[in-house]
Length: 126
Image 1 (cartoon, rainbow, N blue to C red):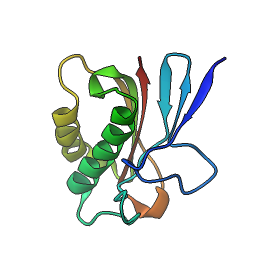
Image 2: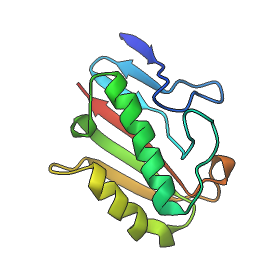
Image 3: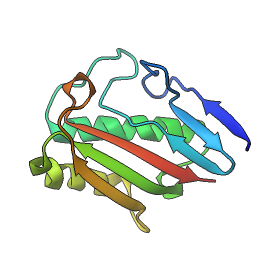
Image 4: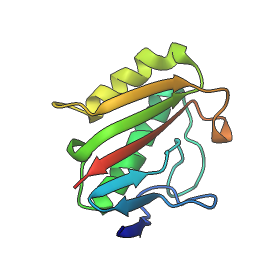
């Protein structure tokens, strides 16, 4: 299998032993993004709306670094610290994903890194 590691300054750098994304053939597997500002590495201020915007902007940065966009995404997984935030997250999500939507799973988790409210990972296809 042909694998290629992706690293871009358009998204927060990996803070552990993982890659921002990995190509496997024509599929791009993106690590989960939390709402970190890529320039400071700090969690953005605000609630789930502001955090979801930052997460999706980080994902956009990874995708664009590979000449892809949200239309190339085929699957997303959304992790929420509180399922009561679903409607607010979904409203933001719908501004980034339009038209033919990717498959999606959304789950509530006990805790996210840096106590973020939302984390999203995506799989895209070339």
